[in-house]
Image (cartoon, rainbow, N blue to C red):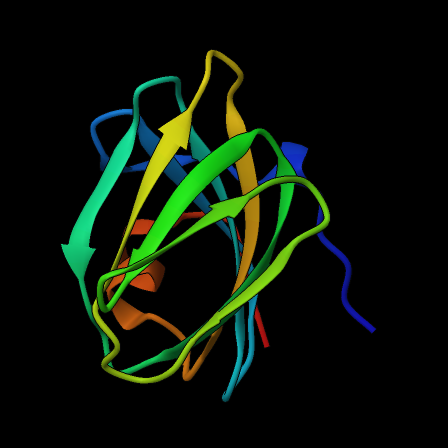
Length: 118
């Protein structure tokens, strides 16, 4: 068994006002804790990796293929491989999201130091 905590992994900057922490990564899945500061935006993008996650704190507007969805704590979301999506934080509270990627995001793994790789 392997365990990790937020305090053991320093965040890296993904975009202005957006920070990530790769907590753990295996051969087929990766856990990424994302923090978005107020007024933070993740512009429209897509990736080969499937992505699902849960909002832990804050509120955000997710946009995918022209469909907008308000996301708040406890809401789970999913983006299939190559689906274009964007995220805009709403309000003055920091947003915290736990994302799971399959396969792991190699671009994030290369930028993260101190995480557990299985």
